[in-house]
Image (cartoon, rainbow, N blue to C red; front, side, top):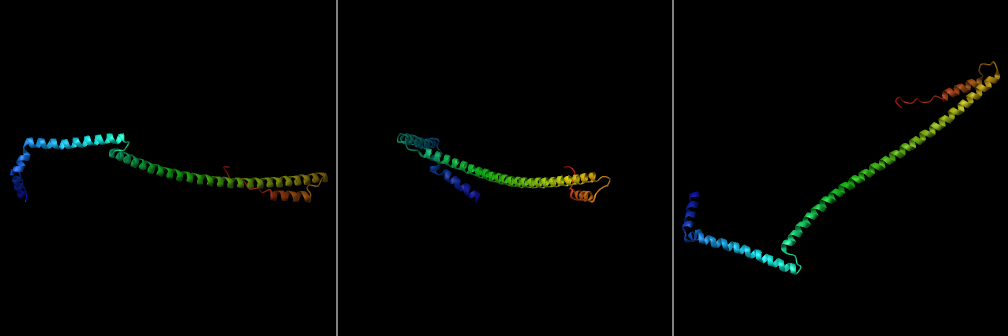
Length: 172
């Protein structure tokens, strides 16, 4: 098969048309014809673009360049849209975290206020018990040689039982 192709190529090269095309003068003319055609197309494009500018029209090259710019700008807009969505998502998360923190702070403040109210109540009870104990001691002192009266003993027991305050955990 390869030999058949080689033989066919030799036959074509031996033909009178191949001999004419192989001549350097013919090749030079063909080369000039091809460059002439390209030069003619360039001159025509230049003249048409000059006429288009005078008439304030866009040339096909300018339209292609504008379309390319539009595609690039659309790509940039798509990238910026993606970034904007990411920023909005982050902002929403931050707002949610801030709201949660505010709620937790409000609960902590309420718990602190409740603890302060309980503390104030306990301090008032302690003050009342101290006053009662002091009054009982004063009555005992008026009584003279009696070691303690029943009233003082009751006040002491009541104070001791009610004053069993919880102790703070270590490290606080």
